[in-house]
Length: 225
Image (cartoon, rainbow, N blue to C red):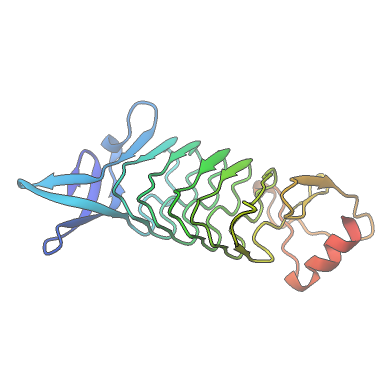
């Protein structure tokens, strides 16, 4: 079903709707995408509870995302590789953001996470190359593996009054072209000169990530940082 350019899957029993994609009409002239909390079909109101899996995967035209209060879940890969996405506004009603939701959103600079979000899941912001700041949720309990991997310029301080379980590789990343390394300590980049190490540029289009054996990461940090 389509409404104002958005595509929906409807549950007739619960009167809930899931967004599954869009047509060209969904974006305004500035590329902003508005996710409504309610939608009406045939005089029946449905609550929009989810943005579905891969709903906007690879969408290069979305520049801004605004989600209305009431939406609860963003499924995995929903905004994966949205390479033009610069700003995100998420409501407090969102309690679940699944794996890789904002993976490789290369123009995203800052994000304020919903205050009721308890877990930042696997690879949620991986390869958000320009991400510099994150406002942490009040309910945050855990940050999973590779959640912020290859966020080269991210600087952060986790709340001291919250007990947060952080995966060892949640923030680690390497930038090889100029021999920069981010240790994942919240202080951003530190310059290193690995003259005697074998470094590998896997894909020059993606800034030359180092995908070494994760068992060697501690050794690399000890040697170069």
